[in-house]
Each structure stands twice: as structure tokens, then as C-alpha cells.
Image 1 (cartoon, protein in one colour):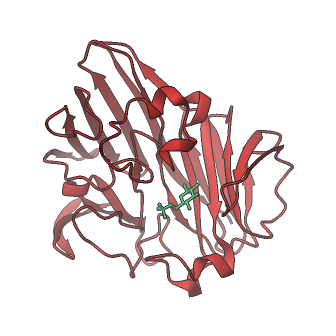
Image 2: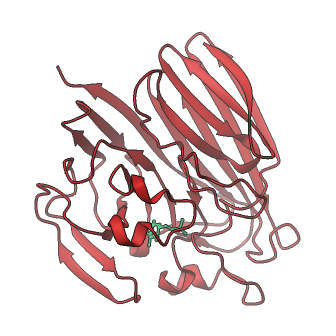
Length: 299
Ligand SMILES: O=P(O)(O)OC[C@H]1O[C@@H](O)[C@H](O)[C@@H](O)[C@@H]1O
């Protein structure tokens, strides 16, 4: 076990090592930037073309989408109503763009724990004027586990949608199989904002751009990668929504911080509480979701 300090643009980051695994984390942004095993392709994609600026989303690792997902207007009205109309509503919420002030680190032989917290209030976050404490907790050893906590310190219900926006690195999105989404209902939005629903058939291979939100997702989803001979197993027992997003070749060229040549090696499979599976937190109570990522190698 080892902890190093490294730099990503203006941000001091921590590089954690545990056996053959490493993880890069920027406490000030509560963002995992990269995760993998030494001398092997990343598991969570570390984007060498990412840009690091205050107030700007970083396309790498796991951006945190909270307290709403995607365009605010695509969320249930109870989630939209939490936002103050006097401020612009950032895509995927403000948690991935704001400065997270405090973090604690605890290292022992069994692993490393990092706890980051963020207070929201009418003064601190006028765009979302509610008294809460958000916590982002990482437990890192052979497995990567993440928890997202929220404490509602106000006197009214708080409604949020949220996702851990996992950027996975895969050998080729045209070869992988995904287990766990088959037979689920999804809603898909195209570039023009038009929505359609459907039932997911078994994935043989991805054959084009996908941007789907799935409901009633089981607690385990597996990405089976036959070329890199590994399974990435994502467990998220307390949240029941998932997003599968891959822009494909043409759209990748138009995206900020997205190397067009990697269009077939990066895939987002996100877990969270979305659309009508949003989280509603009663006054003076707490709630949480969690996710773990575990990799097994094929023989
Ligand atoms: O470019 P952003 O804001 O990080 O979003 C990337 C993608 O994130 C996904 O989660 C959304 O489903 C897509 O619609 C979106 O394009």
C-alpha cells in the first residue's frame, strides 16, 4: 500500500496503490480520474486529453452527476423544482464542477478510505438552495467501492437524481457483451432531444451510438471483454437505474475532451437513481447509494 501526490493540471491528486491496483483521485473535485492494474489497460479510463479547470467538468474516470442527471428539464418535476430559476442549470448537476472543500484519508493494511464532503445551503449553492451534506466515500483495496451519501438538514423533502458516470476502458465496444441489462425497459434520447422507449434485447454487440436510461436494473451488471480477457463486474445494490452511453465514431469527433481515435475503446456504463427512480430524502434523514467495481480475468 502506498500513497503518492501527483498533479493533474492545477489540482493536487492522490495516487493510491494497493497490490497491483492503482487509483488517481482529485479531492478538490471529488473525482476519480483513473483506475486500473499496473501494466494493464485502465479499468476506469484516464483521459490524457482531459482538461482541468475550476467550474468545468472533467471527462475522465468517474464524474459525479448530482443533484440531477442530464438536462434538468428531462428530470421529474419534483427534481426540477429543487433548482433555483435564477441560475443556469448545469448539465448533470453542479457536483462535478464545484469545489469540494474537505477530505479525510485513512490508510491501513486492509486498504485506503477517503471521505469527501460538500455542504449545500442557500448561501453556498444558491442555484440549489437546500441545507444538505453530501459525502463521497471511497474504499480502495482489491475492489473499488464508492458510496454517495446525502443528509437532508432542511425541513422539506429533497428530491434528487444522480449517477456515477463511469467511463470504462474496453478493448472495442463492438466486441464486448453486457450482462444484466437484457429484458429491461429503457428510455433513449437522440441528439435532437427526442425520446423513445423500448425493451433491451440481449446484447450480442453494440452496433451504433447508444444513450439509454434503464429502469429496474439488477444489483449486478457485467462487462465481458473477450479481447482483453476480463470481466468488469459492477455491483450497485441500492440504486436501480443505469445509463449506457457511447457516442460512436461520428459524434465522438464533436465532443469536448474526447480523443476521436478512442471512440471504440471508451464506454460509459453509469449507475444511479434516475427519472422516476429518483431519491427522495425526508427532512432530517440520510440516504445513500453505493457501487463496487471488481475485475476477474479469463484463463
Ligand atoms: O458531455 P457530458 O455533459 O459529460 O455528458 C456526456 C453524456 O453523458 C451521458 O450520461 C448522457 O446520457 C449523455 O446524453 C451525455 O451526452
